[in-house]
Length: 125
Image (tube, rainbow, N blue to C red; front, side):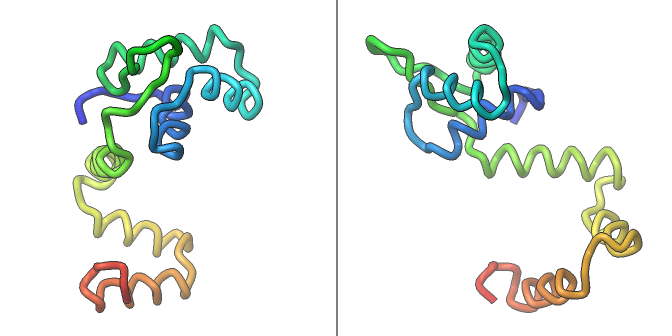
């Protein structure tokens, strides 16, 4: 993914990813006014920025409906790799080691990760 998404823009993306269908601007606005206490103009600006970045697009019609052009999995992969590259010299192992050393992984977390890897990392074990 080439475009950078700000934390505020990410809130709009979360709505679109969760709904996984064309979403009326009105529905995006109502949710973000309620959860974030943002004004309509702020939400509209965020939607337009995302559209201009090529991350979302509107579907033609009488009412503006938006869909994402970037799957959530692609965004997470890109952001995760960027995070690992910046802070852990590109090593996921260094990230996990830091979490273990800082006590941020419980014994149960470690056991679940061990089971995950022993099952081949397919998430079914």
